[in-house]
Length: 591
Image (cartoon, rainbow, N blue to C red):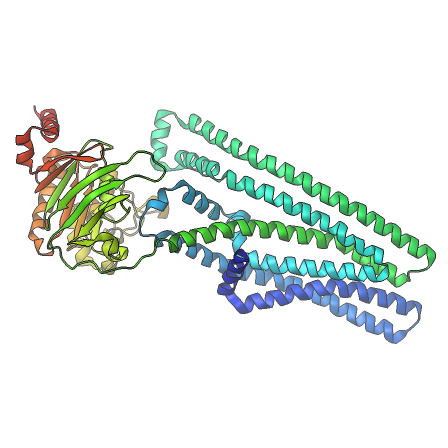
């Protein structure tokens, strides 16, 4: 009932009045079929009895029934398309809202979440469209059942034995429903394989990975793996469809046997003179429609089953979002004590080993803190926890003594900013590509210009055909930038917020040469310290120690724990891991 309620609620949001008209039309269509059979019987019986008034009345009523059937069928199509198109827009908006409402990004890295999302966004009759048309299909199926019931009732009026056709007609429905469950379970079971095949396919057709794949000549192997994955999914699904077809065949075999018996009964009645010519015409008319009515009912049930499956995923996404509520306290306007991590531990969902363990770290207000360590040490995970993109598995994070968990995630996001190594490339006008880093100032040309200057991207914007108004990206026939240029714009985007409480720079200049990175961070740290009145904490992650040494405090991570921390001079004097890494890198640059 909850699934049914969800279906009706979506259609009501799309257009309550339109939906009511649609229901009226399909009901009219259902009644018209039975009325046509009745008027044909009356017309024949009155013609044989030579009752002129009866002939005229039956003909007129039959004409009305035919007209109602034709008009309702045409209008039904237009209203169905109108309301389903609007419902699909609402559903897609709900999916986007449910996905983006969760304050962390944990769900976007969970296979079970991504599987459900992929099934919803699969397109066609097996995706959101199935839910969008569900209420219309429900109305049409109910109308088919009504029409079928009226036909059975009229047949029973000729002879009670003909009502047994209802039992024969139920066989395709019952066994067809069993077949639908087989197919539904198979599609759910293969959703992960389908998503994996799509990912392999995307690697081959998207331009960024395409360069490496073609250079390495790994396209055939990826294609083979995609085909193997697809074949495995299809074996499961096709096998289920064959078994489903066998159940449907059994159902139609039972109906065919019942229909044949009914024809025998009618023939016997005609021979004995217990059925009038009108009865025979009625039986022929309804019997010819009976198969169509059962097929329509079965098809409706199949589509409702598919819509129910999609609705389950749709409701699951909304329930998941509701279980991760937003809201809470406001973030402080400035930092006076800083940000403190106490006993922090974190394990990624589905992973048996923790990524971070026992992290105790204090980030003083106004400080530039660098985090270093080999790949896999947990540096990026630390950043995700501080920015609220993940919730710690254990321990606590406080902001000026207040638990970060009690601060509204949206408000914390509004006072935090960052540039990441896996940065986005928004294909927007260049100015907006930077401006979206602070939406309230999206069209503030002065703020955008300042951020671009601080990121060292002035020359990039100046070289574009229309400056900041130039469309970027090949998808919209815009200007394409080099990877390092995109990265500078990503850094400018992170600098749009001039007075954040937390600014994270996670390998933001990996595509730049060492000297350009050094100059950029030298300029950037100077700017950060000049704006210390807000207590902004800057967290810098970089593999280049020529950059790291400019930080006020340096943290060395190793295997998810803090190995050592202190100033550049103190760590060199200690002669620990930092000193070792720094010496190795300095030697690499020595002539």
